[in-house]
Image: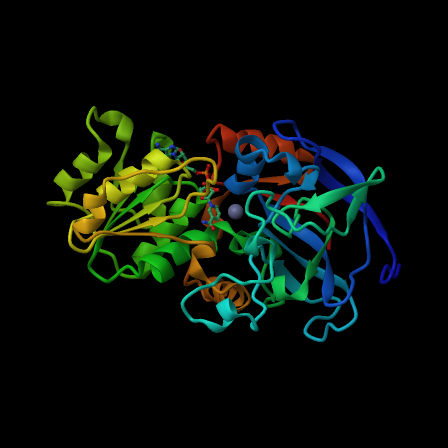
Length: 378
Ligand code: NAD
Ligand code: ZN
C-alpha cells in the first residue's frame, strides 16, 4: 500500500505524564512537510536519557511525548525539497542536527547546531512543533526523534543515511549511547596513547567510553561502578581494572590517586550524578588532567573547589561525544562494519515495542546494558 502523502496510523509508546508507565497507543503520523523525511523505525535502543525525562527531568511542558532517541529505520516518504533521501534509504535519526549552514556547523570546534530542538529546548527536550497526534491531542517528539513509534517524521538535517547492508537492530545504538561514550573519549577528552583513564558508570555510554579510551591507545583504563556485576563487561570493552566505590570508606578520588601515583590523565563521568562529576574531576592529575561530563542532568548545580582548576585540571562536557552528527554516524557505522568498533556486545536483551515498560524497569534496576526493541518488521 502506498502511504506517501497520507496520514499513517500506527503504534507508539506514549508518555502521557511523568513517572507513569508508557501506554501503547494508536497515533496519527502526518506526512512529511518541506525538508522532512518520514521514517519507519525498525529498531531502537532504550537509553538512560529516556528514563531521565520520564523520572527525573519531568518537565510538565515536556508531555505527552513519544520517547526514544536511539533508533534506526527506513525512509517511507519524503517531503518537498528533499533530494538527499528517497524511500527505502536506511537511516539513523539524529537527536542533534547538522544543518551545515549555521555558525556552529561551520566551526570545527563544536557539534552543536543552531537549528535543532537542542538549540533552545533543553528543558522540554522536544521541539514545539510535532507531526504526531493521539486522541485529538498533540504529542511531542522527544529529542526530535521519537523512536518508540513505528513511524516518525524528522527534518532532513537530523537524519543520517547509512550503509544499506548495516543491521538496523545493531547500528541503532550509534544513534546515541555508543557514539556518545566513544566520542567523549576520542573527540572530547582526546585521550592520548599510553595514558591512564578512569571511566565512571558502566552503562552503554561508559562502556563505549572505555572502548574509545582503548581505541585511542590508553594503557590503563580503570572502570568505576557501584554495581559489581558490571566488571566483566567492562573488561570486554578494554578496561584493565575495575573499582567499586562501595568497597572503600574513603573518597573514590583518593583511591584512584593512590592507584595512579597522583591521579588519572583523563576521567569521564557517564552516570549523570553531580557528586560523581565532582569525584571524576578530583580523580584527575593536577597539571594536565582532563575530566569530561557525559552523564545527563539539568536538575542540579555541581560544585568543586576552584583550586582544582587553578592547579591545571580541565573540566569539559560533551553532547553526542562531540560528533558532528550527519558526518559522524555513517563513519561509525562503517567502523562497525569493518569491525573496528563493537556494538553487538552492548546488547544484553532484545524485546518488542510492546515490552517497552519492561525494558525501562530493567534499566532502572541496572539489569541490562542495552535492550534493543524491535519496532516494526521490514
Ligand atoms: P545506565 O543507567 O545504563 O548506566 C549508568 C551506570 O552508572 C550504571 O552501570 C550504574 O550502576 C552506574 N552508577 C550509578 N551510580 C554510580 C556511582 N555513584 N558511581 C559509579 N557508577 C554509578 O545509563 P546509560 O544509558 O549508559 O547513560 C549514562 C549517562 O549518560 C546518563 O546520565 C545519560 O542520560 C547520559 N547520556 C548523555 C549523553 C550526552 O550526549 N551527553 C547522551 C546519552 C546519554
Ligand atoms: Zn541517549
